[in-house]
Amino acid sequence: MGLALDEARAVGASGDVPIGAVVVDPDGQVLGRGRNVRELEADPTGHAEVVALREAGRAVGEWRLSGCTLVVTLEPCAMCAGAAVLSRVDRVVFGAWDDKAGACGSVWDLPRDRRALHRPEVVGGVREEECAALLLDFFGERR
Image 1 (cartoon, rainbow, N blue to C red):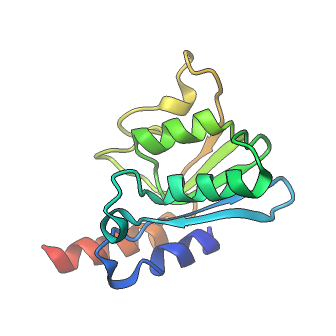
Image 2: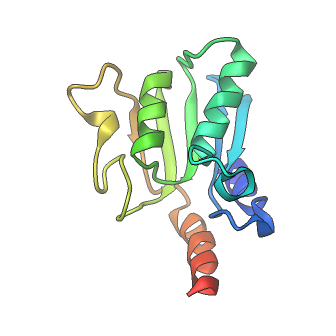
C-alpha cells in the first residue's frame, strides 16, 4: 500500500484526484504502477487501477494477470472493479472505502457477484486513514 500511496501523492498539481495503484506478482515484484490521469491526459478511463493493470499486462506479455494482486488507495469504481475481474487478478486490496461509487463492497460488489466469471479475493481498509486523508485534503481544498 505504501507504493500505491506514493503513486497517489505523485498526482501533484495535475488536478487529478490523488489515487494510486500498483499490481504485484505472487513474489511481491511490482509489475505495474498507476495514478489517476483523467485530467492530465483527458482520458475518461485514466483511473489509477486501469493504468496499473495496463502496465502489468505489458510487463507479463498477456492480459491474464493470474496470481497477481491489485493494490489501490481507494475502493475501485465499477469500471475498475470490472477491469480487475476481467484481468483475472487473484486479489484486490484497497485502502479507503468509497460510499459513493465503490464497487467492491460499498455501493456494488462486482468481484463477489456470483455471476462473475472470476471472483478475486477482496481486502478493504488497509491503511484506510492514510488513504482517506489524501482524499479529504484534496477535496477540502476545493470546497
